[in-house]
Figure 1 (tube, one colour):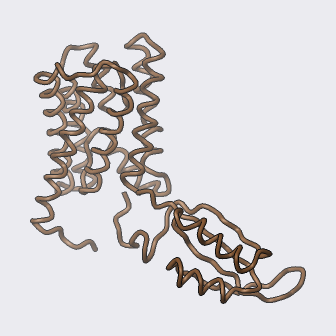
Figure 2 (figure 1 turned 30 degrees about the horizontal axis):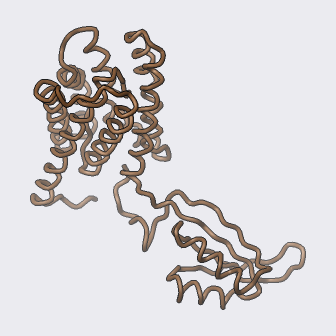
Figure 3 (figure 1 turned 60 degrees about the vertical axis):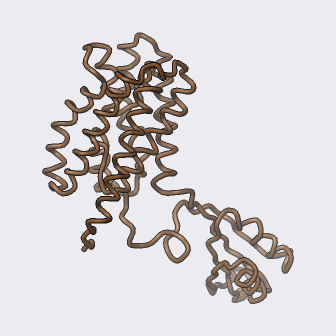
Length: 291
């Protein structure tokens, strides 16, 4: 059972949500919207509908969120949904406020719009997610899908839910290039969102079979502060029993670990593979909430 969140912590989270909502609004109104980019999700759909019916993008975003927020209350409860309603409202207000009062700062450059607008949106969404809320729209749908399919990362699910919006953008803007730019925006948002949510904590998993396992292990412990585990194996052909060193190494330390092995035993058999997520001391906590 999760521990209740303290009032001080909750206030801090609402400050983060407010900042994230403003950042999202700025990115949408000043960078993405002016360049006819529909970055997927309800934001992209709101931009498309804004071209069809002259209602503000932020207001469209809020109107479309109403039925989704009702589903959120049903599935996640009012406590979760209150913060999501707040985030959604702030995003809507920030988007239309910036469009109305800061239009002179809008940047009409598709490359800049895609790059910085998508980055701002991704960072904002990630911050909101970390505060136990969502920015509404497809975020709620993504949250539901993550419960059912926890092995699929959030960024990938965003891509899968954005195809329809990209097609609509191509039709409404009457420009296939607009849909292609929008797809680039989705890709950038997905990439940066995964960094914000999961961090660059990818590591290398190294297996070392050597005649000097104790010396190599000691050097890894003493010089690089890398934990290691001995796995006892047996050669299928020779029948010889050996200690196999297994260690998870952060990427920046991987070359140094490989150098230690080469120094001590140039004939060592070493397997180096990538590990996308590591849990345990020095990495992620087992008890962190899966986003």
